[in-house]
Length: 212
Image (cartoon, rainbow, N blue to C red; front, side, top):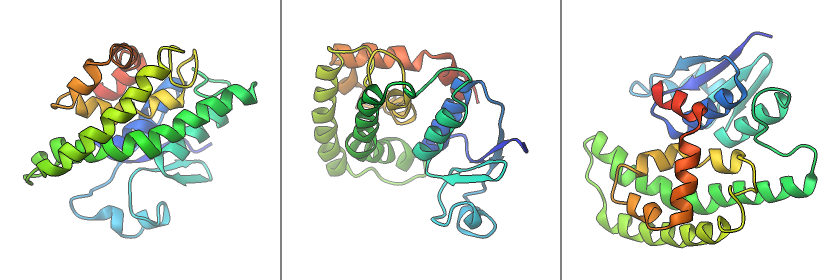
């Protein structure tokens, strides 16, 4: 096998999702930096890896993938015998529950949280002005999602059940950025959400991502 390559950048939330999954599995990989300032992600040869011109792109021998959540699922299944499971292979009903919460993260949580990270973290980083109306709107949306998480986490230790899975891991990058903003109070004011996030962000795999 030619080794795993992740084409991306260290501060990218989507790239960090993939790094975390690889570290959970204890799999070595090569980070291939993409020069986004010069638009390298919008030109060949990168477009042969992701025709949408977004990071990350992923290579594992002859397997070429894009979309971070699809990549983490590939890692979980292709390397099922390594590291931490991340998915539930032996029980379809339990895996169905994990899949529900993976969808909730991508469709409900991320829709609000990623916009907040853009407005409160990345816009200031790039010298752009924060849209306060958008912040208020998406804070309200995120609060509703976190109310549902608070209720869910009274029933199980993790979103997908009693074991850490991709349903939890996928939250880490955006939540990490939000904890440095006013949005942190939305998590901290919900005790089960707060305890859950403290648990998942303390994982050795995530600490390795942060140390990058």
